[in-house]
Image 1 (cartoon, rainbow, N blue to C red):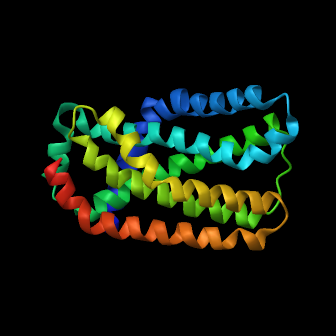
Image 2 (cartoon, rainbow, N blue to C red):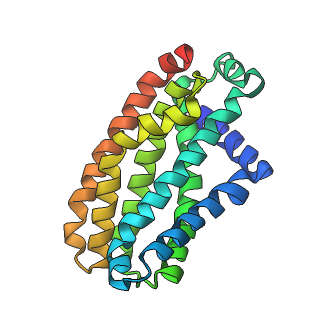
Length: 222
């Protein structure tokens, strides 16, 4: 399963590196969202600083949707999804590989957005340990949930609009938890953020377990 996961993750990452879609489209979109938020809240700099954690994770979530849609649109071209089913790869390995590929793209995007927040919002970055752990756990939760719901929507003609409708409601707890944890880290009270990290960790584990056991049947039905 791990070998298959590494093969799938390597395939997806090589395709993204060659196509430059994440670099040329997803990253500029994410930065544009931050710039628009800065313009919208610029008259009140105090409000902008308070809203920084929420704005950051909204930008990550919206940009993550583009990366997730891209991950499954690759398989939709030229019957690649059927080839993937017939490849003999472990479905759980395929799921974990796609989670790894999407997760690494999200982490790179989060680093870029973190730099953007520090520059555009002039937000002092504190509580590094809590920030890093929150980003890791939230990324796993978003990637696992997105991959699981992505395969559900992959076989439908309206998958581009259906995926956000399916995914955004179930990721609301992750958005809330990551925002609260970032608020605690930036506010100098890390102890208040760790319970939210624990909640997101439970959500991430649940989606990983559901994906490992359910991705195969969902892929056959899609």
